[in-house]
Amino acid sequence: MVEEKKKKNEQEEVKKEEEYNFESEELFSIKEIARTQIHGYDLNCLSFYDYYSYISGADEKVVRIFDAPQSFLNNLGQLNSTLGKDHVLKYGGGVNGSVNDNNGMVVGKEEEEGKSVTTVGKKERVMAATVPALGLTNKSIREGEEREMITTHEFEYQQEEEEEESIDDALAQLNNTSSSMYLNNSNNENIYPPFETQLLQFTLWPEYLKLYGHVNELYCTSVNFNREILATSCKAKNPSLAQIKLWNIKNDFKLIDSLPGHHLTVSRIQFSNNDEWMCSVSKDRCMILYRKKLLLESDNNSSKSSYSYVPLLYQNQCHERIIWDVSFTFDDKFIATGSRDHFIKIFKVPGLDERFEKHEQQLECIQSIDMKQPVTSIHFVSLQLVKEFKEYFNESVELNYLLAVGLEDGSIYLFKGVKNDSNDSTVITWKCICELNKNECHDAAIRRFKFRMNSLNGGNQSLELLSCSLDHSVRCFDIFQQQ
Image (cartoon, rainbow, N blue to C red; front, top):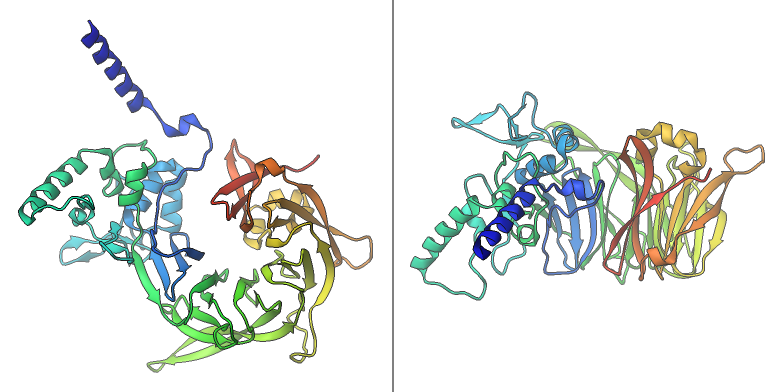
């Protein structure tokens, strides 16, 4: 009787697991779906230059570039149902003439030596990646090479003859388990988010390229909105090391220029929404505004148009302490800086038609906001968000100039831009509208902000604020408009 009851309980548990859908537990939730990079050094900065490609910098002199494998795109489409598949087809989809097979995999019609090649965005994607022993580079694993993913336990040393048998047995066992869906296509409509072992072994992204040029450890990376220029900086104690390096993303990350100006480490680089301006702030308490400059490169009797940025305005000692962050408004008419001196300063950006000489004119500071703690992060709503969700932002124009402010103690404040009653419509004053509940905020300094829209809540659009902090957490806040 006892054994029969145990068997029935086990069968019921199996049925529950088969019927379980992770989406039914929480209607809307954030799950970890990949652990793309496991680095031996502390990571300092990261920037996406594509929906499925990013650039990272750590306490090393190398800039590393990663690209999503095909297994990630397949599983992302299945985890996110129809929305995920549509996004993969639109932003990570195949070449012209590609078709979608039964498993949601994008297969191009190109053929190579009689074999079909899986291509996404005119570029062949590998199936997965793995990190070799005592290595830092994610090695690419192409389709049919899954045995490279199976490794023995780091404390178990086996003979060469036993290794081949253990690998074959492990590979056969892997194909019969749920882990195989993170390497190959799965016919399951509802799959689960990866478990811890799967995150460590099967969700790495292959390393696409390394960029060399900095002498010290990387500190800051930034990509412009057209995804054409990458700006990087490293730790520096003299002007020669504090230069900003510009890389051409469209031309295989070729080095374009090295921009001088700062004397110490550049803490933040920000591009304007129209890419006409670039602004950098540094530990030397200065801010530099750069202007776009067209270049002409000759390459094998063919001309390629490119552009760089040249220093235009030097805002010397605009703060009394280190400047941690800088951000443009959605219309690029204003720029804000946050510093350790507890102040947020908002400057008016000059028009593109204005002419002035270098070093003689500085930006006009229209407002200074005194905070209770050192300011570590600030962020305006981006133009891309305003354009994509016009109806939402047109209902409340004040949200267009919404500013998120993060302090050293983890506090978060929201400011909105209010137009004055004067005849000049360009005069805007920022006022604090709320302070987030301290119990829901971070316990350490906030490093980055990001606004996003959530349009999945029953068709109702809502504005959300993502924040990351030195307390090792990322938090998501819903922003509600007061009636």
